[in-house]
Image (tube, rainbow, N blue to C red; front, side, top):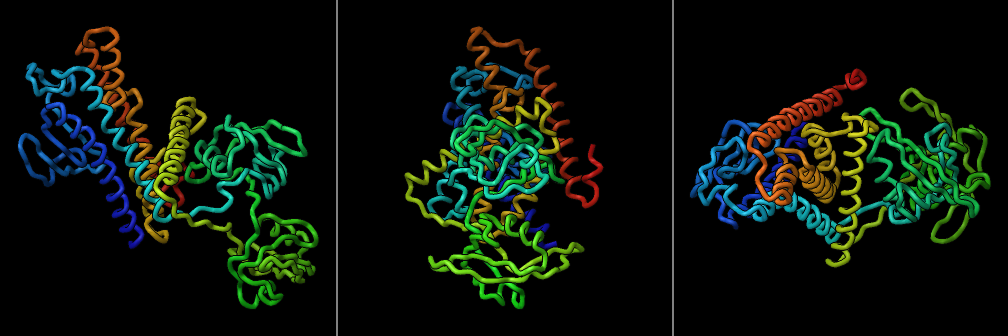
Length: 446
């Protein structure tokens, strides 16, 4: 129950802010040019609460799946008298700015929120900003089948030269089931290959099976287990097992399953000094599976940054630019059929992600998520689909080129078809999210 409440409050906060900012962008631009705004609504459907000020009804409506600003004479289905305050009575360039204002507000919000996060408190694995050198490849994984080996460096991914691990993560995790082209550097030779990340139970892309090359830092020890008994301490860096270099925890785990209960020599660094200890793994049963363990945990080193405004803004612009390309790639792969519609998220999926982010320490995870969703909302609304802002922008541009208005009948049909399409799309995405949220049912999805 607590988890549900956290998710509910989080998603109401996130979507409430994003919808308000989006609609306020339209509202402010409309007011600037003297367009009459009849309604400013958070949500759709029946009016729940609100107030009227001047010519505008400010309301919260029953269906919390977005919002709208209703301008006089805005849609082809409205009556048009030619009055000066009607939307269609204003020059096309003004209407274009009004249509762009909503998505622009969301994109600007994403940039500002990410900038604030980078200025106040940002945490990320140390390897994120490092070159994409592979520290380990899991046997039988997608990466293994693609011929990727430990020690390889990914020097190109989807056309991006010299990517960092963050670039690699974003490009592989954004498009489940879609091919990702790579170029590897091995022994001074360039090797072209590709991987197709598999879909997990939530229809998101799973790790192809590679682990970044990063120090194997001991972050926790279990009492009365071999590692603690041998004198290993939190903060030590494991460098080798039986003389075999290890640059990831899975690499060490693999060696321990091979040596079983035979004593192993572990080389480590402590305060810059090298030392060796002998440890004898023990066979332990975890969740019905038996593994040889020494009782230590290793997590990537986390870097905490507090950037000045200008570097924070530059990083925010870079991140938002990267995420923008990924959103476009995801939609393109969706249209091509290489990505399932089940990878899309409805407010239910957003609520789940918001709840998870809210439960993490600090406020920055939820703010980061809100920035990403705000960016996605802004970009999605720019797609040239009638009803969306992008559809209106496209029609205004076409009218500007042909120097006359598009037939009202054509506009009406376009809006009606687009409305049905978007309602069906939303219904399918919501259905998929409900099925994925119910244990044991997601596997029945076609």
